[in-house]
Image (tube, rainbow, N blue to C red; front, side):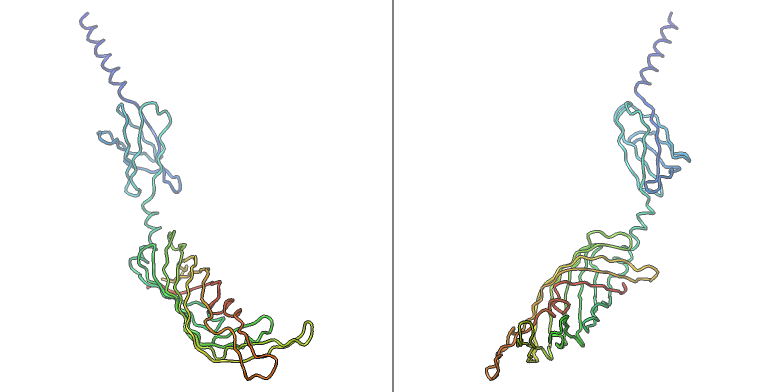
Length: 311
């Protein structure tokens, strides 16, 4: 009788102990390519329970009663904690780890640019269209910020016209500088998207600037009369742009960026000329501003391509 009582007590204790534990199993995969992670450590925090995954990424654990957290670690992956909520969990636990190698690769360009290379200088070929040499300098402040300068040197600038307007004979020299601030919204690996703000200043010498009048000879016919004037002026403005920067493939430290934006920069010259000594029927000439605001130094739409290097 006494032996029977002892056996019943022991059986009850075993049942009680087993009710305080539950079995859990699961899988651990690489988050990028879903391959199993072998030999990952799976540990229940604040306990001595620990195991490792097999070649298929599987693990099994006996978990004490209550709410617990699993900590998963591996030399090649970021550690992760996963909450467990008792024996009602019937499905396998599936955990996906982020590779440390991927993070390093994604940040390699950023590290090389922001830590080893603090400057970039580029040539802007589109400037040649209006007789200018365009140079861009950028100084990296942080991974997502930079300051820089767009410089346009007008050595042989000219106006243009699509309807044989005399403004095509405008010629100018000078310089335009645009200090800028860039904020990179998203930069990964070798490329990034940025927003840019600019302050603009220009010093321009017109030689000549043509003022025109139109003399009608019929309902739809007529001819232009012109008066030229050499003058020098300064003008100030501002601009905004969005763009994309990328490290050029197969070129060490090569960088390329493209941007499109808007600027406001006025043609700061007298808009009309009056000649009180002109004996004809036209003693007032007007300056055409189209060439300045469409394709000229004050072009409202700004498109920039820049090729260069970081150093």
